[in-house]
Image (tube, rainbow over all chains, first blue to last red):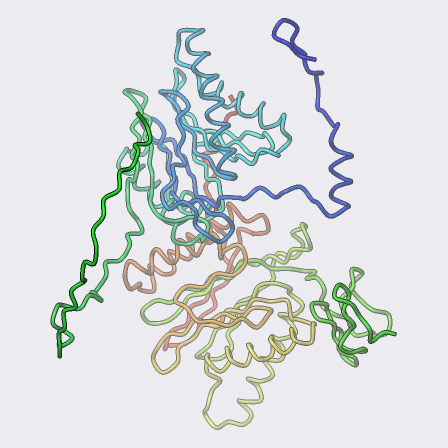
Length: 274
Length: 263
C-alpha cells in the first residue's frame, strides 16, 4: 500500500500484467477501443533565420469535422513549438507534459533549453508507451547551435531533417516541399512555401481543412505565432434572404378579440430565503 | 424443423442461394476467392495479386493537347527487376494510352488494342478510333472482368484530341472511369495531384510549361515513391499527332543529404 512516507516505487521495465486479460476480452468480443485519428497536415521547415512551422485547423471524428478551428501548434518553450498530428488528446497532453518538464529544466540550468532535449524527452516517453500514445509530432525550435526540425513518430523514432511533414496530408505537403524547398530561403519565401504546403493538404486531403496556422521562430527575437495566417475556406455569403417583407401577404380581414378579465386575486407568498 | 425459428435465430428464407451479407459464388463462374488464391477445379488463373507491377502514370491537359509520363520500371515485389518496360503506347494519330499496375495484364490488352487498330486500317474507310471511344471501351472491358471477379489489375490513362478539344480520362481495375484536366495513378494520386491541380487552377498551360511541370512531378515521385525509377518516358498528343519520346534519365538532386545529421 502506498503512502506519502513510504511511496511504492514501481518495478522497472514494461508491465505486461494486463496482456492476458486484454487478449481474453478481445476473444470474447470486447476489443480494445480504437483511438480516433484526427487527419491533419503539419509541416516544418528550416529557412535562413530560423524555423517556420505550419498546420491546418481541422479536427475530425471519423468522417465528421468536430472542430473547424482547432490549434495544432503547441507551445513547448519560448524558443520551440511543436505541431501535433494523430489523436488530439495525446498530442495535447504529451506536449503539455514535456513543456512543464522543459520549464523545470530551464529553471534548473538557467539557460535556454536545447531543442534536442525536447526531442529526447518526447521520444523516451512515446517509446515507453510502445505506440499506444498516438502522437506524431513535428518539433521545431532554435537554440545555441541554430535552428532544428525534428519529426517524432508515435512509436518513438526521431528524424532530424531540414523540412518535415506529418499527418494524412503529409504526402500532398511533401510534394510541395520536394518541388520547391531550397536552403537559406528568406522569411517571405519560407512563409509562402509553408502556406502552399498546408494549402495542398487542405485542398487535396479530406482529413485536413479550414485555415492555415503559422509559427515563425527566429534565431533573434521571440517566436511569432500567427494564428489563422490565412482563412483558406471562408463560409460562403448567403445570396438571398428567405424573409418576406411586411405586406407580401395581403391582409383581407382583421378581427380583434380582447381577453376579458373575469376576476383579480392577490395571494401572499413566503420568500424562499430570509 | 428448419422452418421454425425464434426471435433470436430466425429461420432462413431460402436454401441454396445467397445469404445476406455473405459472399456468394455464382455457380458456373469464377469461384470464390480463397486465401490460397486459386481453386483446383478451375484451371484458368484468377488475378488475385499483381506480380510484375509498374507505378504511377501522370497525365496533364494543356491548351492544345495532353502530355503523359511514366517511368520504365517493372517491379517484382520489392525487386527492381525489369528496367525497360515501356508503358506509353501510341494507339493512332489521335490517341495515346498509358498504363500502370500489373504489366502482364497491360501487355494482354495492348496486343488486343494493336489488333483493333490493324483491323481498322484493313477496313480502310478513313475512320479512326477516337479517344473517348477507347476510354468507353476500356471501361466496359475492365468492369466486365471485375464483375467476374477476375480483374485486369491496371489503371489506364487515355489521352487524345477529339473534335478539336483535348481529352484526358482514366479507367481503373474496378471500371471506375472519369475525365479530368489532371490525372495521376498510384502514389502520384497523393503526391503529383496537388502540384498538377495547383498549376492548372492558376491558368491555361502551354505545351512547354506542361512538360516542365510533368518532369518536376516525376522528380518528386522519384524522391518519395519506393517503387519508382529515374528513367521515364514522355508522350505528347496534339491535333498534329502523337509523339512518344525515347526514355530519358531524370535529374535528381541529393545535395541536401549533407544537411541531415542526427546530432
